[in-house]
Image 1: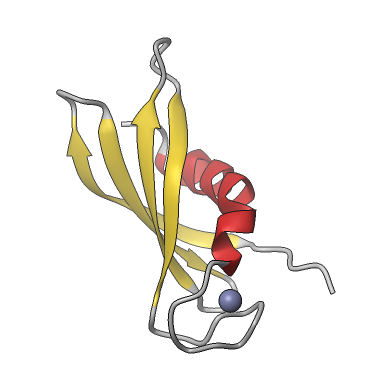
Image 2: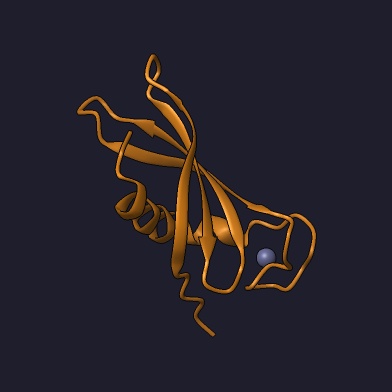
Length: 89
Ligand SMILES: [Zn+2]
């Protein structure tokens, strides 16, 4: 079964203009909440470096309610949807 994450809400929760790092908390349609960490490349384009699932709901992929790495497979999809909502700070 392919998991198809759909971002319904995204918020920039921290931003450091000095080093280009920022964090976005995103809510998915299935109520999964993830925190994404971004850096910027030499051209100033946001690059997702890390994703972690906040432990509010079981993982939508493996159903664990503790730490797992499933969301890392969807880092690119979730981060591009999140950035289309928040823009790049
Ligand atoms: Zn999982």
